[in-house]
Image 1 (cartoon, rainbow, N blue to C red):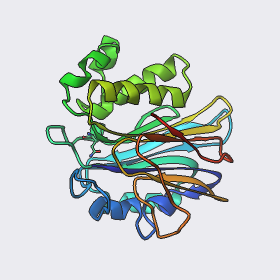
Image 2 (cartoon, rainbow, N blue to C red; image 1 turned 90 degrees about the vertical axis):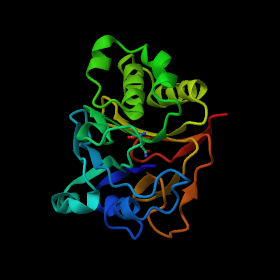
Image 3 (tube, protein in one colour; image 1 turned 135 degrees about the vertical axis):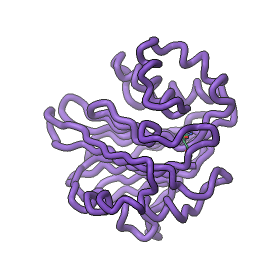
Image 4 (cartoon, protein in one colour; image 1 turned 30 degrees about the vertical axis):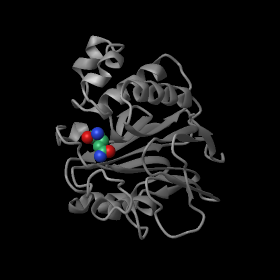
Length: 257
Ligand code: GLN
């Protein structure tokens, strides 16, 4: 199963400080993950980063994705040392059997300043999600970035955000209903959004997959696997969500049961 991470902090840090430089960075988790829990071996089917630029109402989102192993993209490894942000998401992908390897299938998905990743699988795809997908309008379904479970989950979350729903409520509603429709699914979702003042909200769920977080003076980092052996990493219990509101906020862990 894919690996992902997100960071929110008071000061900009390089993408590399979380994605490529730590001893067990996302780059290492691409070729030597430690806690895949029975789902795949390496995360070599693509990667992506999405980040917010600017700390005010002028905040904009950017992203970079490629359907190749992260370690083969030397330009990205360089770019990651140059780009600084206070809020970003990164992911490496292990395509679920039957799903395509393409740039559009690589997380994170982005719509303006909304950035989304899914680590896991919807059991019984595609039939199990058909009723939920029927809530989406035809044009949304026609323009999904990829025919994957993750792309449909993203469209369902986006629909709630478009309707003005709180980001945490949007994610929790989608995971609750997807789990009811497709029991046994692995649904580690990450959503990063910015409000009208540019303040970020980060929501991360742990449903049948590994997730840890670390909070400190330099912000909050959430990752599938701890990036180093710092004892400050806390493992998120199963069926729980971590929510971080604002750059200076502390993470709140909520049980989904
Ligand atoms: N099912 C998703 C995909 O194929 C996520 C894969 C994963 O987490 N390994 O893109």
